[in-house]
Every structure is written in structure tokens, then in C-alpha cells.
Amino acid sequence: MTEETETRAEGVAGIRDVVSIRLPAASAYLSVLRTATAGLAARLDFTLDEIEDLRIAVDEACAMLLSEAVPGTDLTAEFELTGQEMQVRVEVATVGSSAPKRDDFAWMVLTALADDVDAVAPSQGFPDRMAIVLRKRRGAAQRTAGPA
Amino acid sequence: MTVIDTAPLAGASASVPTLVHLSGDIDIFSTARLRQRLINTLDHSTDLLVVDLSQVTFCGAGGIGVLIGVQGRARTRGITLALTGVPPRVARLLRITGLDHRFPVMA
Image (cartoon, rainbow over all chains, first blue to last red; front, side, top):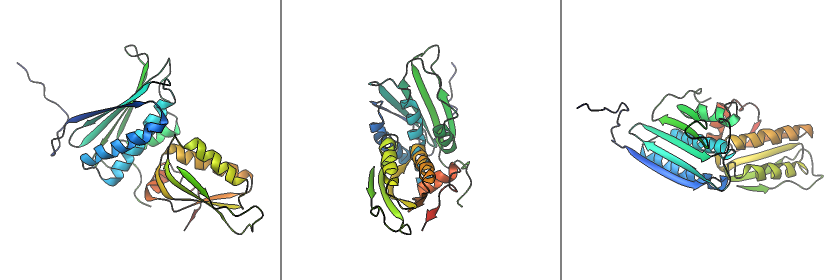
């Protein structure tokens, strides 16, 4: 018998939780998602700057997706919390859209604030779904210049 | 997001800046309304429009986009758009996007 070992390191806190939130795919609900993001990041002891980065990053990801979302459908956000890292996957229903635009101003901000970002375009298996997955680790070096 | 416009009446001295206070969250839910309100303000602004961000609780890329867009419109009318009370988090976003030198900042 072989035993699969999880490659992702577990933090001191030992937190391994998944939190899912489903909201109408409408901009009026983004403030709710930002608040949830901040609360979950605080649970992982992220710094205030890291929490703010995550709030903005999640907001930008949703802003990009909402412009492609089918009205009247839901936006789902799945937060995966491990000791040092939060992964957020936001997803909407689309109709025959292309991938999220990577030359967008929102995309530039998103990639500057998160440690990793992936855009998941509608694909063979899921032709009507578009998602953005972002990750942020606690204590990761900032890519941006230090304080002026 | 709310906009409190304390602009002087039309015809006021051009040496008096027009001050606009923004408060609350500036996100894609509020940007369209904010853009329109700021553009309306240009109609009776002196040649210096100062936007006070001290009560802004959230500002994403969309909010920065509005400020850039309104600044462009202001310029075509000979109005300078400056910022004041920039919260550290907004200042950081401006720095990250390389737009921190686009706006004069008043103390």
C-alpha cells in the first residue's frame, strides 16, 4: 500500500480549511466577498498589507469575471486555507467567452498583488465556466518597490 | 460610495480650489456613478479640483481608472485634478500601478 503525501507544507497553525461562498454574479455583492476575504486572511495571521492585497486581488479577479458572467447566475468563491497560504478560486458562468484578458489594467493589478495568478478559460470539459485562481502566501517578498 | 461636493459657486475666484470629498468603497459597483458625479463637478470647478480620499475605505483598479479618466477630461478644460488625504493603501496601489506621479498631491 502506498501512501500519498501532500506536498503543500502545513503551517504551524495546522489550518486546512476550505470555505465556499456563493453569491449572485453582481457587483453589488463584491463588498461582501471583500469582507469575507479579509476575515479569512486574518485567520491565517496575514499582515494588514497582505490582507489589503488579497482584498484588492479578489476584487479585481471578480471584476474581470463579472464582465463576462451571464446575468442572473452565481459567482462562486472557494477559499483554500493552509497554514501559510490562501488560494482563492473565483468562478462564473459564461457563454462562449474567451479567456480573461491579460492585458487588462485589472489583471496587471491582480498579478502585482497576488503571488500567483492563473486564468482558467472555458475548456473542453467546462465550456461555460470561467475562473481565476490566485494564491498568496504569508510573509512572501513583495514584488513591488519598498515604501517611497 | 458617496460624493460630497463643496465646490464654490460658479464664478468664484479661480485661486480657490474646488474640493470634493469621497467616502466609502470605490469598486465596480460604484465607479460609473462616481465618474458621472466627478464629471458633473467639472462644470462648476475652478481651475484646481482637489479630490479628498481620506474617507475612502476601499479603492481598486477601477477607482484609479476613474480618477485617471476624469483627470484627462479636466485637463481638456484647463482644470488640474489633485488628490488629498490619500490613504496609505490607495497610495500603495498608485505606486504599484506606476501612477503615483500622475496626480499632484496636496498636503
